[in-house]
Image (cartoon, rainbow, N blue to C red; front, side, top):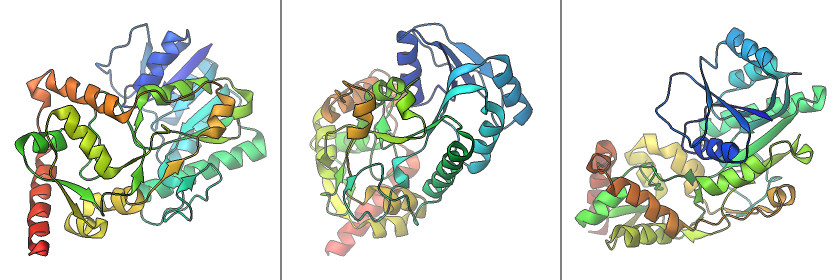
Length: 331
């Protein structure tokens, strides 16, 4: 069985490639440049531009893949290229969308696949919705074998996730230095962190599943935590008690607009994902890596090399400014 990963060396996709190899799939990975990413078993690396229509069509004709996994399709134009190349040439096409597509603000914090798709706050989410609409139309009109998959915040051993400032060593650095860290809102909104190896179990389990074609699934952990609990567990793993301060999401977004869409359009809302749909198609799927265990692995990876233990300079600077703003507001 042959599978093509369009983008296979990233945070989420690398774990999926590794598991597909372990399960005996014949794996091809398409990337723009040769990656240093190494896998336990042989991968057929293809270098090329996924936005080159002629190259993509040639790749589809040369090998009829049983499964194509699109990890780097962010715009409708990307999906249109894939539809042109792989229509009639693939058994199943899995598109990585995003759980950010779900209605914001949500009418219910319990998220199911039939939750409306609507996010007025974030262009990234709206582009993913447009991609999904193209695939749904193609399946309806020409039976294109699409399966849509929506990850939420998914991390691996090289990532230290955070709600404010993006994934980096910054929060661990600040905790270990005794510096305050920012928790948006009152820190009590509900969230789910998913380890990439757990995501991979369900994702690869969808390969070749006839009942998955024409359907959409989210894949997340079932563990639900508040943001303050997320940072407290991070502190325990780092061996430092975090000094958590709280600021409204709108204030953070106003102070640093680049963080606004991902915060206002996603993380400020409580979300709890009902994973029963994917569990029906992938029997036995159960996320096993708790946040406490996963973040300990990530911190250990960073601790293994001093070069990895650098905060994001811009994020650290903005966080200092937010701490000063918080102190002024409290005064």
